[in-house]
Image (cartoon, rainbow, N blue to C red):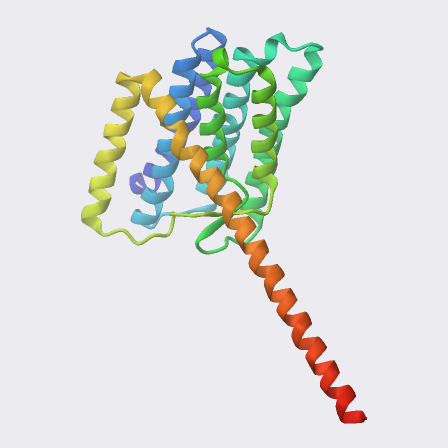
Length: 250
């Protein structure tokens, strides 16, 4: 019974951190709020791996994880960017709408993930933790960015979450037991670094998260290019077949 509860404790920790992030941002502590979101991403990555390692996956844990993600990676990042940048928008309703779009698309992304059969090796649509990490860390640069940039990024991330672009998944990579312990220690060290150096580390994490988002876009363009090449090849073969049939008839 205790073993089955361990992954859920990570999920509840994820939810707790999301709520704390919202509290921090309304107390004008945007850096600490972004830090809470980053730690929540780490906790979210651990709960699934722990569940698979202990072989205690359940529908309850899956639903709890999705509900927690809506708060930690949908609502919390949206409030962070709203408080640091969108409050001054005119008319105010513009800021409300842009803020609301992000968690709504995040909820749609999670609902689709729960009902559509998982595809091995990749996610369909930008995972909400990655989108949350990008938005939360980018909000820390709001002093040097125009609000229009954050609006465009917020809407772009929202679209990527509900898109059909494929992003690589690292969930089912077979990791040897010694490496699992190393990853656990590395995760704890990462959390410690975020706590000790919240501003520097959270800003630094913006880079790999953006590269991940751009990688999915690049792979999608490459895949579309290969699909169009295949279609062109099929058309050429079809035309050759038709020419041969015409020659045969004549």
